[in-house]
Length: 201
Image: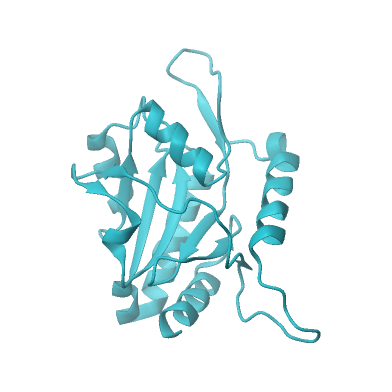
């Protein structure tokens, strides 16, 4: 996936998220988070999609856990496997607290990402990870609600297209409130640090 082709669009979108959602800090006050604090953002605020086991899911299903929401697709050559690996490393770093975190991968390519493919792909990074999918209309709605950019880029054949998409992850606290935006390539230990703060707050 080529990130530079949409860097300006994503940069503006992420800047808007940070401005719209971040609580204002007092002079001299520093945020404890490595990610961008977007507490108060009205993104979403929820979804209704089907997991790779065929169960309909909403954010309320995971109340009591911190939730990391990431949008991608299984044919993604770099960003998606890197992000899922970083999330797996974060849960490993959390130790037993990792059981209080749910990672959700929402496909932006429902045409190719069948439930069977998602079930084989996403839990391979960590067996607790869940893949979520919907039809074209449901996918369009959830990407629109969470301000996620996703656009197909033609390949050499009709089935070899790629999908340019937003690379950030969104983090909800255990009460289901959106709290953080994690930029792409945030290291697993920094993700774990932010999750631990949310879990202990």
